[in-house]
Every structure is written in structure tokens, then in C-alpha cells.
Length: 133
Image (cartoon, rainbow, N blue to C red; front, side):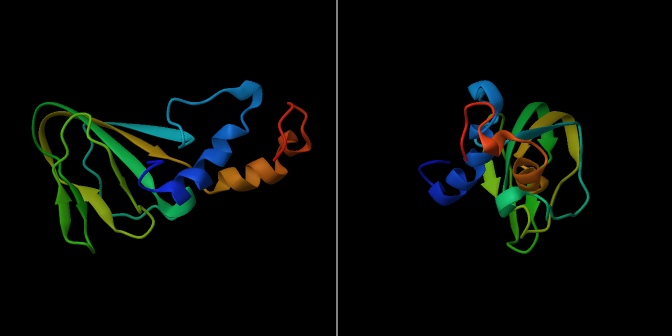
């Protein structure tokens, strides 16, 4: 992501870089993760994803179907285990097709409310953990 979407990478990583004790989440540069188990989603957009993007990593076993659809773009991604798709989840209506078999996915994201939390709900910006924003 750093090589292909450098501006988005830089904007997202700021949230993770200020964690106390220099902890770096495994979802870096995204600060959050959702685990979907055997889920087919309804059509939706994610307007609260920071920077308007998310990353999807599917894991399947003996699975058919489950393609990730971006409605406005008229695209269907038949992702395989371990593929990573980063897309503008706030701009595109998306959903996944029904599945037959075992399927799970990690959805990497960062909620927009994280910015206000960083700025007003804690004192990290004042350097109390040795970190300056």
C-alpha cells in the first residue's frame, strides 16, 4: 500500500503511529479489523471509513462464490485466500455474493471517529507518552 497509495498510507498510518508505548498493530497502517465468518453482505457503503478506504483479505476452503462486487464500477472480484483488495469503500456501493463452502475475511479499516478521539479524547497529543503530533 505504501508503494501504490502513498498519500492514503501516510494519512492512515498517523493514527497507528501515536499509539502509546510505540505499539504497532498487525493491521498497520489500518487501525481496526473486522472478522467476517461465512457472511454475505447486503449492498452498502462505508462513509465512516477514514480516508474512505478499506482492505479486504479473504480466506476460503472448498468455497464457491462469495465474489466482492463494486456496483458502480460493475466489477466482481473473485478473490482467493490471501489476496488483498484495497478499495474506496465510502465511494462504491459494495457487497459480496452468496457462498457455498467455508469462507472468512479480514476487513481492515479505520473509523473516521478515530481522528476526533486522537485530537480531543486523550492527552497523547500533549506528549504524555513521549509522542508529539
